Structure formats: structure tokens, C-alpha cells
Amino acid sequence: MSALKKLASQTATYGLSSIVGRLLNYLLVPVYVRTLSVYDNGVMTNVYAYVTFLLILFTYGLETGFFRFANKPELDDKRVYSTALTTIVGSSILFSLVMVAFSGPVAAWIDYPRHPEYVIYFAAILGLDAISSIPFVWLRYQNKALKFVSGKLLSIGVNIFFVLFFLVLCPYLLKNDPENFLLNLYNPGIGVGYVFISNLVASVVTLLFLYKELYFGIGGMDKKILKSMMIYSIPLMFAGLAGTVNESFSRIILQKELPFSPTENTIQLGIFGNVFKLAIFMQLAIQTFRMASEPFFFSMYKQVDARMVYARVMNYFVIICCLIFLTVTLYLDIIKHILKPVYFEGLVVVPILLLAYLFLGIYQNLSIWFKLADKTRFGLYFTIFGALITIILNYALIPVYGYTGSAIATLICYVSMAVVCYLVGQKYYSVPYNLKRITAYLFFTLALYVAGDFIRLFIFNPVTAPWFFSMTFLIGIFIIVVFIAEKRNLRIKNVASQNY
Image (cartoon, rainbow, N blue to C red; front, side):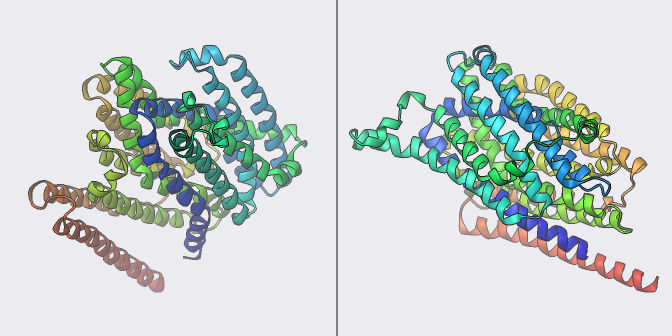
């Protein structure tokens, strides 16, 4: 239990910046949908989808690679850090310069030939963020939670400040005080470009915040360590790329495969992109867990009861994700008002996406086996398998079902990856997961969701007191049933251990 308490503590600590930060960023969604057109929201969604791919290339798996090699007793962790940081700095500068040199052709390739500046902005952002990623990993490794959280929140705060400045304050001043000196910094023709500029400023400030970690680590490199780290990390990079196909490919292909005009396709992408953000709570749970669990799993894998702990962690993780799924889906008629009514047509995909992310979290939990067993090539195999499913199903379903087809493809992909990862993992690194209990929780959650949907459609009108109490009652049923089941399970295990 002490190990689980340690994981819970790390999750709370490192998850704080993730949860608070993502929620603060989420507050910008109403700003975007009210200050930018649906088309511009589509542009933003599309550009950030490409950026997600590129950030994997810029960091090429060295974050996880650092944790693996820094925890090896025969290696100097400072030497490992210096090697990783120096390598990332050099490659990031090179990659960014290449992007700037070819900004025109790249802008045309992503369908924005009139805006090569978008490519230049993100060449700088990607380089800066890749360099910052290694000092942040070092802070996690050193358990310097305060500085880690401060750096993440600083970046988010700066980004929010400049988004509000350019998209809210400046248009207001232009309308009501056109002589204000602040308008010297503003050009209304830039539009959605100010979202990218705000991101760039935040990336610069973040790198400056980490100057001590940069100064401490830059310059030294051990070629032997680098070679070993690259052999370990490159498969993770390809796995990350394939995984990003599962995450972002739909937002790229939608613009090209939807059977409408280019403008309407971008509008549909804008709707899907903002509705997609309603799955943020499940994304937060997964991201927070991953950040805390990775160093935790590596640090205790030599313990005698490690595999039992991993199994219990999975159990509690699924419970939390099921609770998030129910909370968001049952209260969706309230949550949806974050968006403008023009986006409501896309709400049908929210339960599908939440369930898809739940299975992504299960997969990431299962994936610890190939990281601990130094068989990271399996991560590549699984994500390529998932990427193929994503690509095939997106091409097959989008022309027929639009973005709903894309959401279905995402769900099928993550379910398939989780199943295959479990089956293969039990052969190489068996963990006694309680499949019956996990499956029971999943089906019980879906049954409660269906009951809530039935109540909303046929019994009580949404956003009324009877409806609200009914939804809350369903969530309460889930909590009570899980509490009873888990308490009974712990009691049985305690009795068994005493008899033993």
C-alpha cells in the first residue's frame, strides 16, 4: 500500500500542473469560439495536428530514454542528462532551421500557401519546446516538483495572457479606443496567427525559466551512453509517431476526405476540433497518470511485489476513468454550453471519444511491460498496428459518417491496441490484472450511461432539477458499488495473507 500511496502522491504533485494548466487552457475554448470564426478554429485544429507529429520527431523518445538510463546504477545520471540535453539542443536547432528554410513549400503542403509565417512560428516553438522537455524531465527525476509545476504553469499563464491580449483586449480597444498606444502591437489581419504567436512567446519564457538546468547540463556528451539511449529511444519515437497517427491523423484527413467544399471541410474540422476538447477530463487523467507512473514503475520494478502493485494500479485507474466518463457524459447537457450552439451538432462524438481515451489509458498502463523488459520495439509494433487501423477506418468511415466515423475509428484503434498489448505482454512480463473486475466496471459504466441517456430522452428534460438529481443518483450508484466491491476485495486479500 505504501507504494500505491507514493504513486498517488506523485500523481497529485505532477498532475497539478497538468490538471490546472489544461483547465486554464480550456478556459480559452470559449474565447476561441467567440472571437474566431469556425473556419479559423478549423485552421488552428489542423495546424496543431501537424505540430503534434513534429514534436515527436524533435524529441525522438529521449524523455523516456533518460528515465531508463538515469535509473541504471552503473551510469552517472548527470552524465546521462548532459548527453540527452546536448543532443536535443543540437538536433532542435538543425530541425528548426530546415523548417524555416522550406517554410513556403511546407505551408503550401498543409494547404496554407499564403501563410508561410505559420511554419516559421512553429519551427521556433518546436525547437524551444523540445529543448525545454529535457530539463523538465530532469526536474521530475530529481523530484523538484515545485519548480516543475511553476515552469508549466508559467508557460500556460503567459500563453493565456497574450491570447486574451490579442484576441479580446486589442479588438475591444480598436472598437472603443482606436488611439490607444497598445494598438501599435496589433494587426487585425493576423487573426488566428495571434494564437500561434502567443504560443511562441510562452515557449521563449519557459526556456528562460529553465536557464539553470540548461547551463548545468549543456556541453557534455558521452557517445557510448548516447548510442545506447538512441537504440532504446528510437523505437519509442516511431511508436510515438504511430501513436500520433491515432491521436491526430483524423484532424488532418478530415479536411481532405469530407465530401464538402474546402471551406466547409475546414468548418467541420473546427466543430470536431472543439467538441474533441470536451474529452479533456479523460485526457487529463491519462496524462497525469503517465507523468507520475513512468518514474514510479521504473523505480520499483525490482521489488518482489511489483507486479501485484501494477495490477492494483490498473484497477484503480480504470475506476477513476469510468467515473470521469460518467460525469462528463451524464452532465454533458450542462458542459456543452462552454461552446456556442453552432458546435452542438458534434456532441454525439463525445461519449465515443471519452471511451476511446479510457482504452488509451489502459493501453499506456499495460505498456509498462515492454519498457521494463527493454523490448521497446513492441511499442512500435503495437502503435503501427493501431495506426494502420486508424488510417484504414478513417478512409472508410469519414466519407460516409463524417467526423463520427473518425471517432469510431479512434475507439476501435485503442481497444485493439489494448487487447493485443495485454495478450503479448502476458507472455514476456506477466502481470496478474483482474480482468473480470475491470470488464465488470466497464460494462457497469456503459449500462449507467445508457440509463442516463434514456432518462434524458424519455423521462426528464435536460438541465432541470429532476434530471440533475437523476444523473447525480446514477453517479452515486457507481461510487457505492465500486466502494463495496473494492472494500470486499481488500478484506479477502487481507484474510488470505493472514492465513498464509
